[in-house]
Image (cartoon, rainbow, N blue to C red; front, side, top):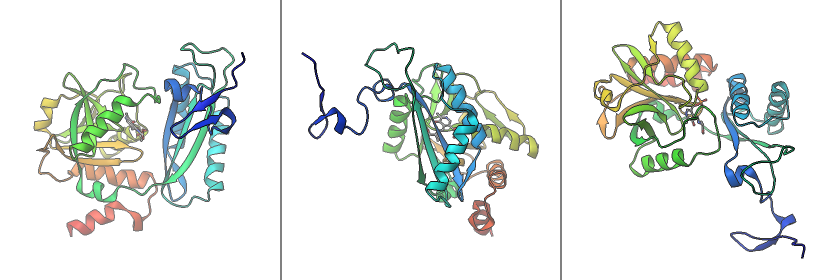
Length: 297
Ligand code: PDD
């Protein structure tokens, strides 16, 4: 007998051709793929080269050969913005999976990657960036290669969900008390004017914004120390913040209900937010920093 597949879905039985996606797809079945989230301000990419470089590093680390050059991907992504006539603040989500093949843990030699990217309007988190956010500490139960931006995000998803259920905006991940990063961001502690963060080793994602923060610190004469801190160090923190392409530079005002500093965003965090806006060429009317000045006046 030759089986002509009828697939059982959440709604009904459907013929294979009616499915919108291949059912034997390695991204879906194994989380076997990599992704990027890229920020767009006023219709322009921010840190596009950095994201594309990381995409290639991630793909190479899991033996996926991307079937385009970096230049081709960039041109296609610019085309995506043009086709969608994007002139607002947005994000591009793009993912590359190993491809479609009969389910087997090992993959065929000739498998071809599947690629898609979409753009979505997403406003800046202005209120949160002005006021700061509460975070919840959670054990970091992920694997050793978190520098690969892989689709396997279940520990991150569950940590963030726990944070949300406890009224927090981000989960701060720690391995035996040593703070690694956030569930979808990098994390920093400021003490005596010095910024501490986990070194860019294999067990954290090397954030594109993190890279810029290191440069901003250099430019502003703020010491940037890649020494990991411990949950117990948090009680001595003057400031804390997290960074990502979505959260930008986000002040953290409490951890597990304990207030950081005086419970408002600190001076170093504000300087870095200002540097970020300059770097991302954010106009004065849309500037968070203008709002901070108004708030303080
Ligand atoms: N996440 N660490 C983790 C675990 C992340 O998922 C992210 C970003 C970052 C910050 O990386 P970057 O500065 O390059 O955005 C750090 C994206 C936003 C996401 O998964 O939605």
